[in-house]
Image (tube, rainbow, N blue to C red):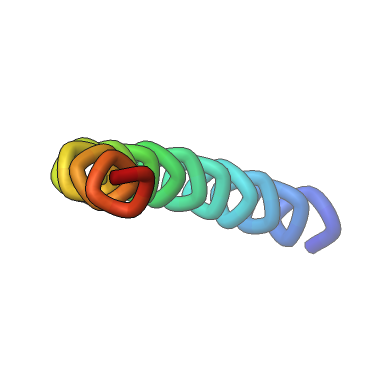
Amino acid sequence: MVSEYGQILMVCIRIRKYVLDSWGVCLGFMVGIIGGLCLPFKREYDLGFMV
């Protein structure tokens, strides 16, 4: 019973870790894409603000 529960727990932890890792990668891509899109506008805005 304990070993069975332990195996289920290990599988759950493994799945959770995988989900968190993939979510982290997904979030990283999203931030990268949004940052890449916003950066040129921000640079133009900063230059426009200086002038």
